[in-house]
Length: 117
Ligand SMILES: [Zn+2]
Ligand SMILES: [Zn+2]
Image (cartoon, rainbow, N blue to C red; front, top):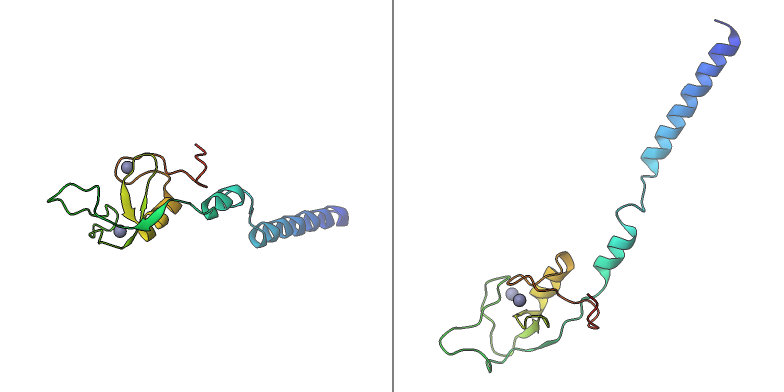
């Protein structure tokens, strides 16, 4: 084996380690995050209002399908515009960050309140 070959071998090995180090230190960032994260962080604007039992049927206490707790008079609630299902404001806001559909009927939860589908 000549000196030249050994040097070349050493050079290639060094280069390989260097590339491996770069790959470990700088994982590809723009594949998953980027746009997806931007989208997740976009505020979901749903109409919210203190709950009032005006349109509910008698005898059936309205409940939030997410936490299964009762929707109490005066509690801050949000409604999904597409289907008019009502949930606690905090519950549906947290839910809408993960899924863009109504937990009850899977109707689309619009983002931005402008009805982008
Ligand atoms: Zn709830
Ligand atoms: Zn619904």
